[in-house]
Image (cartoon, rainbow, N blue to C red; front, side, top):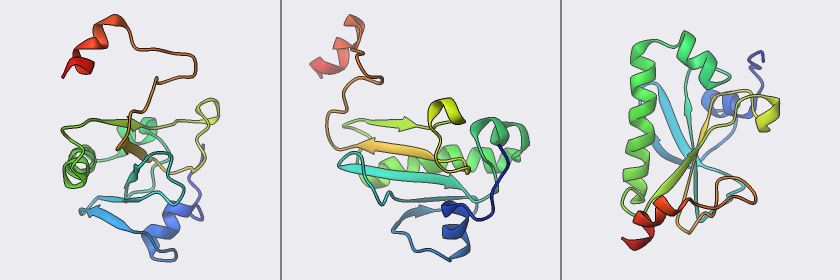
Length: 132
């Protein structure tokens, strides 16, 4: 997948499109999704032109990588979802239905999210979290 400078996240980073910011660092930006799939739905993107985790892990500097991972955690804490729980989701490529060719992580929370994949269920060992 080739990076497209006209993708929606590149436009947000350039200031061509608005966003509702949640958290920003030198290398990362977190903002509310315009079509939320959960009560809390925030996207976290690196400011560099990376299309996927594969591209990012192979080509981003250590500083960019550390900043991005820290920004995801900081965003969850800022949203107050670090204790109730949240899901982090990143799609890569056609088979995963990646819609924007810019690395982005979805942070989903604020409600029970159900199984990871359709028809799936939590294994019995996951009952630990249900008891808390």
